[in-house]
Image 1 (cartoon, rainbow, N blue to C red):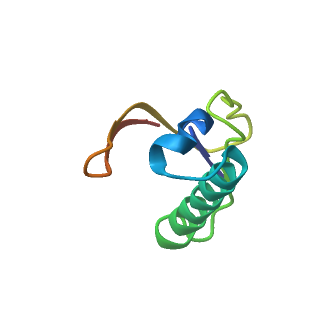
Image 2: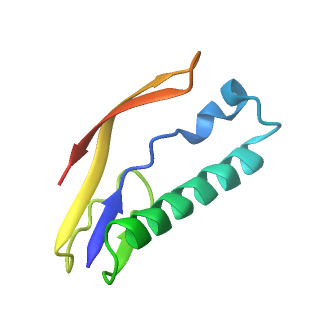
Length: 88
């Protein structure tokens, strides 16, 4: 069982990325996180159960064989590049 944690986008940043409102932005981020989790599970962790953190403060790794957390995120808003640290 593996756990992925740490949303890299803040809900308050919706206007910086051109979204009409917080609800639309929140759904986009939720969809991106779900797609990322599913991609990790199918490509790299096949046959494993993967759970995702509820939010960036969700550090509950109990019952997991592997816990991966993303932090120290830096976003290049001009080129949509992301730099981050991965802890496992």
